[in-house]
Length: 325
Image 1 (tube, rainbow, N blue to C red):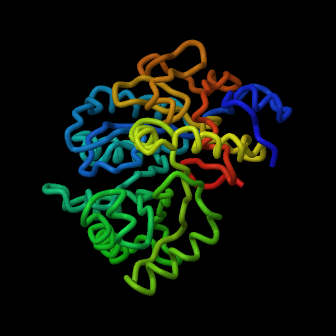
Image 2: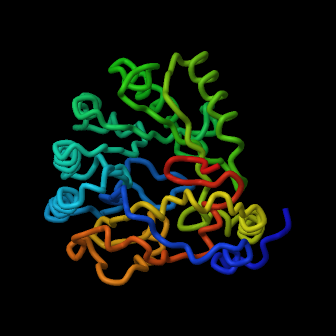
């Protein structure tokens, strides 16, 4: 593949014969309920951790539910953090969305199940048929602990076994349990089907753990991972890797085209990565959840882009649902 040229994403779209990146009618409301987390992972684009205090307030949670109720086209609520379960309004948000018959995805770091006072979580997930998307960046303890902290791998396996006992991740079970892989270093993920097969083999054979699918996600050159690249002197090399592996076939499936991202303070963004860069939603009109009434008005609006967008379009692509092609 020829080099894509300078890290100007819009210009790269033009060279590929594509127009400006524009929205389709939204089908997912992705909500970051806060930056507090019981872990502080080296790659975290949210810069989340135990010391963060940003947290979505109860009135904003209620407004999110109002927007869901008023917009049947929003079939999915995707709840993120930090560790979203640490928000006091988490139960209200999930139960309220399920009462509206929405699919609810929770992006879980697994070890949060063992935080003091949260022993109710596994049964709560099951009772509300929450779709769990759980981070596990490798199937070996050394790699996971190096990226996420000492003891995280063992805690994650413990959590997965507990969820399996409740029916999550089992073949034929409606209780969806998917895992997320991201590279430990400054390189692109390998082929998603191959990695998924290896995860099934390794986790099943060594730990008796079952899950449904594996999503491969590219590390984004923003926030904590960007600082890690800078300290290692790898920033330019990694950006060149992303730019030179731009794949036009990934563009139709980009997550920003069909979701609305809501920050912990109610501000609106085109995607979770733009949210962390404080790059506001490009559509004219609503800038916060309080101003958003009919999400269909966002259709065809231009999407705010930047050089980080090469992270979602490199190789097989990357999204909250894994590879795109």
